[in-house]
Length: 613
Image 1 (cartoon, one colour):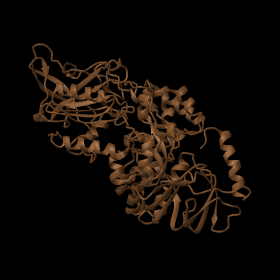
Image 2 (cartoon, helix red, strand yellow):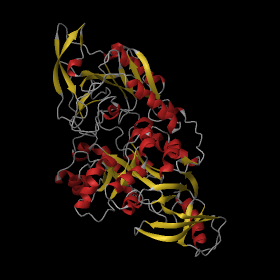
Image 3 (cartoon, one colour):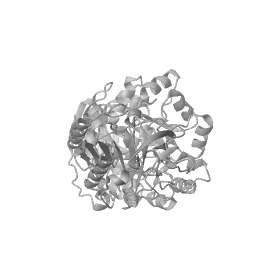
């Protein structure tokens, strides 16, 4: 899509003449089969007339009425539309968009709806400047940003941005902005007393005024009343549904379901057994997938293959990654199908049932052959506003992580959280006191967890005790600037000194991971862009991650199993999501704020509590 309506009309005037044969096409691509995604039928021996970066005409080979500067023959291959991401955080690949393009385009991905509350919480008003810059520099990946509603995620958190109705209205003036990223603070939507209530409704109003899409986040909403209220509020989608019954209940109430790959084993056979014949209200969402996992598994092609493996017809599975998300996001004039007016983004398959990709075209030219990316990667010197975002303001010491006891006490009550157990309340444990400090208890898998403010320069530290996570090995700590969704720095450790060392190491590289083992810095991973991404090739980042995994293999990690298979034993990479306040809207540790000075707060009610007493 062009940056203005006037530019778009100029392009379409020319496409009209090319389609009529009154102006020449730049190239004519002939394919053995073409998937008409609108009817889910295959058309044999087809040609695609391309003008600039768009499709001007499609039809039977030999019937194009005009001339073409170049003819390309791919009669041994089948053409399907470029794959799209209906809901993805590119930040979770940990690559900047120009390197994300090099990673995912060979997998067929040519466009992404970027769910941008991650970066929004770091760079605030500069959100669009970041996402649109690589395309300006020639990157073939189309990014349709959705600025975040969760900026900040709740009224009791601080971050690097603050969005309300005015900010969203300004974002929506750009035609490439598809809507409002997932509305996650569900209690603030329905509870008029919630401090974020008016802010969220104002952002939703600004989005709807511009005919944008308001994306939802319905984690834990499974009863008919909650689902109905969710839909009635105007929240158009949910990517959290995980069971057949939950998906069905949301589909029948008009909610567009964005199915993540880990739910497909249950949901796709279940929906087929239930007799679902209309799949246009579903799409496949990658949501969060690291560059390492994409190198190992694939991108949206992995989602499509997984759906086929669980019984979905290839044509329907492809629709769930092309026309369905494009319709939902109101982007069909530009992406989602091989039809006139759309970008000439084409995936050429050598085998349909296995989705074997031979070539990928974007903007009317080949950009990938097999696993090889052919297009140049723009060399972008990202500015300070996105590369100098870790602002603690000082060096931390062990003193910053102490939890002091009341004078004369030998034991103290402590509030204890367990990640991914999602209990309504925190645990209360009695912990020993030594040298005036409340102590960890590794015999009960109780360690210390902290969140450090990295946005304001004040370097405030909230700390408490957690159970079933972190290192038992002495002098060991793990820290990261990847802490959904405010992306303050978190640290977990067996000693206060090691925690300080790990946080300082993360700050020194302007974001990423740091692992201290037995008081020695054992590994770092650099996310120098917003503390979330790196401007490097995926293979280079993966090599650094593998070093971190190897160093983490020498550590004895505490673990307490939950109902969730996504909380595995070993290196607790999943802790990057442990401070999510959008689910289950209960007690969470946040960086210190005026509303939650100790950091322990119930994000449904705003109630705070001491961490020891």
